[in-house]
Image (cartoon, rainbow, N blue to C red; front, side, top):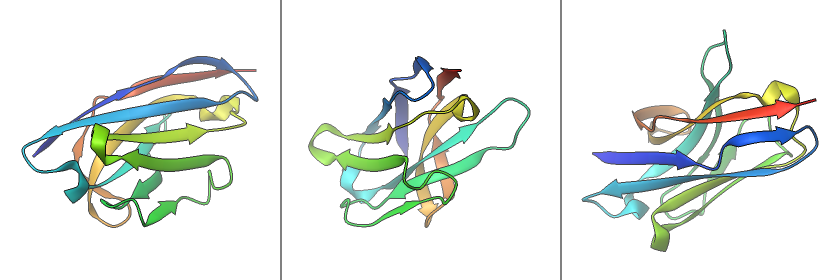
Length: 120
């Protein structure tokens, strides 16, 4: 089992960038977990954004955000990141990190989420 805590959300203006962090706690090494990012906007279903393998070698980014987001990790810090650029009001959502047990978008453990609000 792994515990995940997101941070870095907030209120930003459209066109700006934001970096989200997800810090993990587990008895197993963080590098043993594939992890990813999802988001859920009000009134919408949860949406997969990106995933990264345990070593960080493999990544997968959803077409909906490709070109605007980068996923990366620092296993020495037990932390994964989501860099989001050129934010749009439609990016407003609660962002969740999760451990991935079915590549790339099937998750089994979730953080509690961090709110991102993009103003126009």
